[in-house]
Image 1: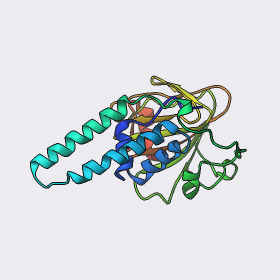
Image 2 (image 1 turned 90 degrees about the horizontal axis):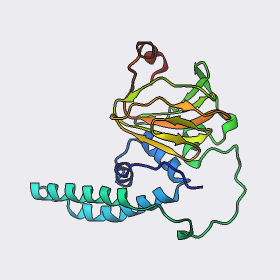
Image 3 (image 1 turned 120 degrees about the vertical axis):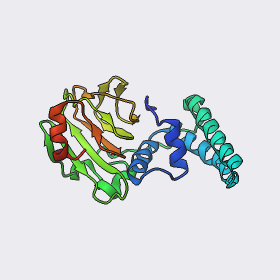
Image 4 (image 1 turned 60 degrees about the vertical axis):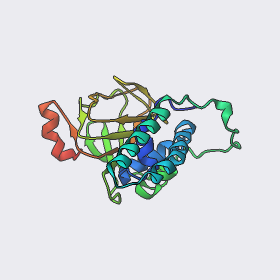
Length: 224
């Protein structure tokens, strides 16, 4: 099933250009592993990016032209329709290991859900931080069903890819395969759905912002 929530076109362009932090690029790669639509957008961005390379003049006119082309690229990606299911040949049937983590996460967290070593963060909330990522914060969260997270916004960007379970917030319902691509303008309060714990991988370029005094007091302890 195609994910319902995709990468922002600006994120696609930045990923294709190699301009994302390592943490952000890992979450993008995890989403791309299961999303035909966003993989096609990355391919488009890489093709159009060749034009940008040719416009690397040092003068002001060249810089303006680059900005114009980049804006046109983002607009084109933003307006492109979802890829119909029949556009790509169906892959050969395979039996996926339900315990296996997506391949882009292996270097940072290991190969399987069963070997993850969770650390308690709060009642019903557990976390694992990657210690090998060189740029940004990369971590996994496991949140119990029906748990309401603190209301928060973002210092810069946040990318969250749902691996198992689901949550709901002002932006909608996010299930397995969906990615939340958020900037500093978004304030939200995820609430995990009933049923399975929600397991996701997330990246931050800057600490979260909490309007509540209690969450702000706890922030130095949890480090997000």
